[in-house]
Image (cartoon, rainbow, N blue to C red):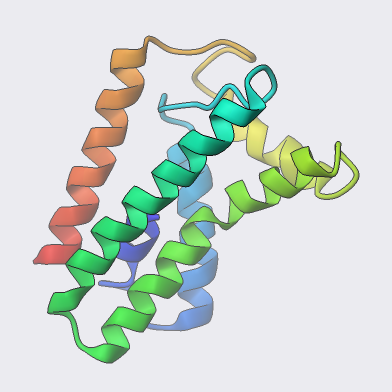
Length: 143
């Protein structure tokens, strides 16, 4: 979400920003990062996802206070489209694979480019890469 919002500091065309934020999501999925155990611990994962989105929104709303109304809307737009691929994945899981099957294959392809399929990197590595993405995003949003 924050990375998609950060794109709005450079991309001011809403359609281009939307596609770029979704594309950035997939590119960032290549890096080892925090993963949810959605298949084995669905209820616990839902709480973590809600907390994760809530924290991202709280940070984003705090950060965008410095921007003008047009920039605020673009940052929210970029943030929204930055998490759209995960929204499609949620629909896939809740529909038991009925919807967004191709998107899910495409999404998991990016996850497994570096990390072997159905494995998890060390937690410290996932958290470190996420912290780096958040730090760079905040730098771009606050400059």
